[in-house]
Image (cartoon, rainbow, N blue to C red; front, side, top):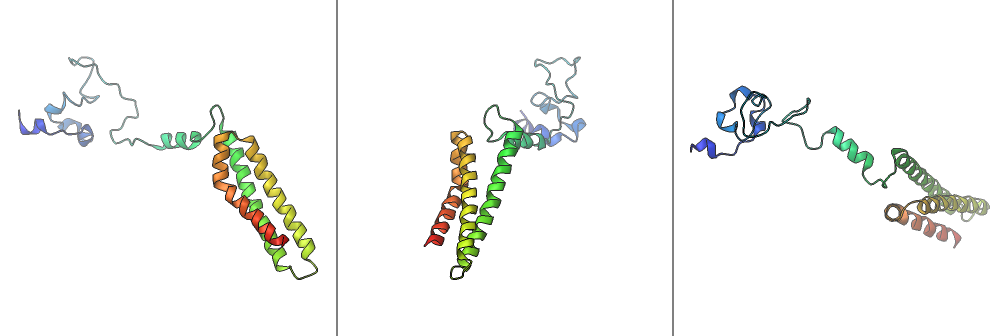
Length: 168
């Protein structure tokens, strides 16, 4: 046994130079060029796809798009459900920012004649955000509801606390 035959070499090392592959690798890592129907072999030939490349990564763009599109989705749901969910979350986040701005404006007007009007506007904005959040939460399955509460629940509690600060 030669020293080279004991060294484990990968087929991808010789991918660009298939004519220079040492003969001892033929038995261990057959290439599509070396195995033809006429070649006698104790093994069945390996079939490679037409776009086969030894340097193909495990997660190419096709795999990552599959993971991105279907990761975390409910079973039997489709892409449009996910897009609608993300749109609603974005809308809630936008309304959250607007409600906080309304609360800040009301706090600035605390000792003025405009305070009651600003406070009512802030209360309405907070009510809209919390209603949107609770409506979305009620329509989701349990595991997605928990994920939504983890990501946005503290924001809603913060909004309620700021509104209570306004009421004092």
